[in-house]
Every structure is written in structure tokens, then in C-alpha cells.
Image (cartoon, rainbow, N blue to C red; front, side, top):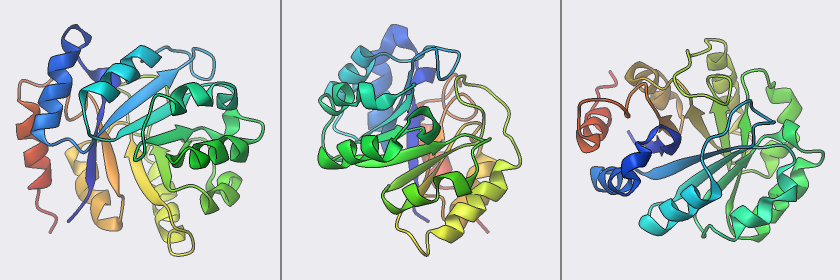
Length: 221
């Protein structure tokens, strides 16, 4: 069964970022997930533009840039100009007056357009945007901090989106409180990838490659 594994880099050891990127890369991570926060859309600050630039220069793997910022259209070019084809930019639709305009800029730049959906955001409110995006990042926790508990009602939203893929062409990704149990339950349903943070990948007394290999070798029967 194929699914992607993405490293939530806000959870990495920033005293050894070069080593962290190299270890994840060699360990078989599929992409690096970059959380950018402005302290307004969410009450926290996470990674910086320079963090993103460094990771982009240190790996050939794709980057998934998750913009948790107000009015991303005002600064989207800064991120576009520091990424390359194959990278994804996610915006939160409710953070922008005209999110489709921002998404079109991402498309025009040759990057992958995505939207991130908060636990409290209904599928119905983003229905039309599902026709133009390629990736939908479903937040299983409220955005802004690592180490939160899974919100069970998000599971119904995931299943709803997976059913809608028959009509529209987009992939569904999981972000937040991602355990081995959640991968075992939702990968067979069609979730394309999982963002791994402190629940499963970081802060463990185990090499990243061993953890990633164990996930890929899980039984799904």
C-alpha cells in the first residue's frame, strides 16, 4: 500500500538542523513539512523564511509549506520565489478574502496548490476550491502547536473528502496527532500522506530511518 510520510520540521532539533535534515533524508522521508505562522492567524510563531530556505537548499525532496498566516496573498511571492516545481503551498481559505486569487498565483508559478482545513472548517465552505487545488491538508488538531490530542469528529470529514475525490481530482493528507493506529485506519481508505510530528517520529530514542521503515512495513489486515 502506497502512502507518503512527511516530516513536521517545527518538531525538529534546531540545534542540529543540518543533521536532522540529513537523517530524515537518508531515512526515507518523502517530503519536509514546513509550518509558517504569523502569531495572528494562530497564536504562535513557528518556522521562519530562512528555515525554509535552508531546508530547501539541503535536500532534493519536495517541501510542503503550510502557511498559517493572515492574508497570504500579501506575501505569497516571497515563498513562491524560494521554492521549486514539485513543492506544495497550503493556505487556509478563511485567512484570505479571495483565496482563489492566491491559489492561482501558486498554480501560475508551477507549484502545487493546496488548502488546509481546520477542525472547525466545514467541507461545504471550501467545496468550490476543491475544483482547483491538488492537495487538501486536513488538520486533525487545531493549528498552531505540536503535541495536541486528536479530535475524533475530524474522521468523518476525512471520509467525506475521500468520497468527493470521485468527482474532483485532489489528494487528501493528514496533519496532527498522527499515530501508527491512525495510519493503519486511514491509509487503506485513501489518505495519500501523513505529516509526522512528536506523536510518532520526533523526540524518540530511535533512528528516523527505523521508524519510517517500521511504518511502511505495518500490516493492514
